Image (tube, rainbow, N blue to C red):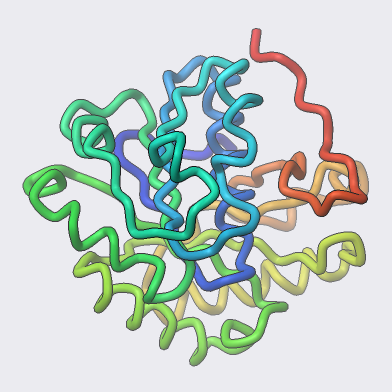
Length: 234
């Protein structure tokens, strides 16, 4: 199944949910399918594992990446480029906004209210059930409420990103899917897709999933690890 997402898509979630890795891989997935993609790094809180860290790679693939001004790239300051407002007013095939974690990280979205006014968008919550605060349905719903309140926007979908990084097993993927499926039922939000690391894909029975699967080619790794090599977009 293809991932049915286009237009303006905001990716949100709690710290450690893997939302930025999901954003990067979703951008690559859509670019490979022939869609024009642009992505904005709105994570102005967490100094680690941000979209800007792979700006060069994404740019080489033909993905337009918007980041804070050069002199502030390594700063942890609430700087929102006016270019992002223009990007929203004239979106490309898929315009991804990678928001910061938790309610604090999405505060910046409230500043985009004027630009987003009257425009259709999808705001999706990335859920990793193996992380604190989102290991129960109740916790996920609480996180959703906090994000919506801070951003003054409405979440209208879920992404299942069950993983324990290098320790993830096939069973973890299946259990994670069952969790977000239940969350989808109780929240009445559609499950847009789930993720699976590229190394695990050969062992996964995708017929067990009633939603699309996004293969994750991990890019945001600590210095002693090597990112998965992403083939050029043809």
